[in-house]
Length: 106
Image 1 (spheres, helix red, strand yellow):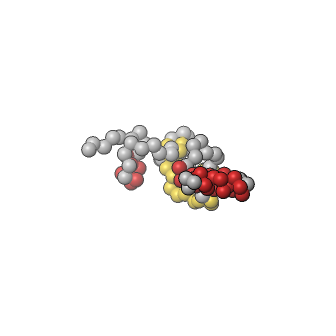
Image 2 (image 1 turned 90 degrees about the vertical axis):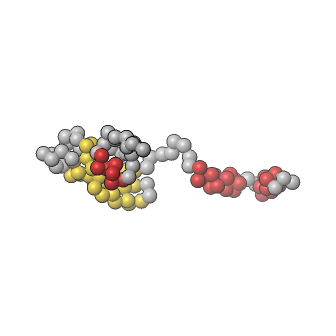
Image 3 (image 1 turned 180 degrees about the horizontal axis):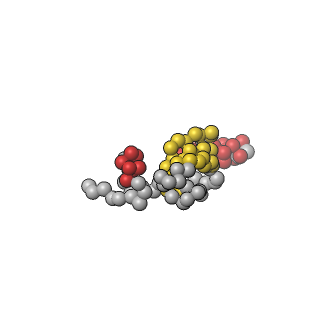
């Protein structure tokens, strides 16, 4: 199997063991050159600070990006049970029993 070259650094591909995969690319806000994420500090499961460094030797800028989750475009298949539970909890007791009877084939 031949390796497909990435547009990003080949060292990154070797370090991560990935070939031809989309990666989060950060550019230096000072010179526009590619930057490397050196460390990530997760404040919450939906909020992180990314400590970055510019790859342009003459620039050498180090900076922090704050990254946060915004919204869902397509719900996870893993959250289906939570959705079903929420919907069932919204039913009146007699409607809930009717739904259970339907699910049990009665």
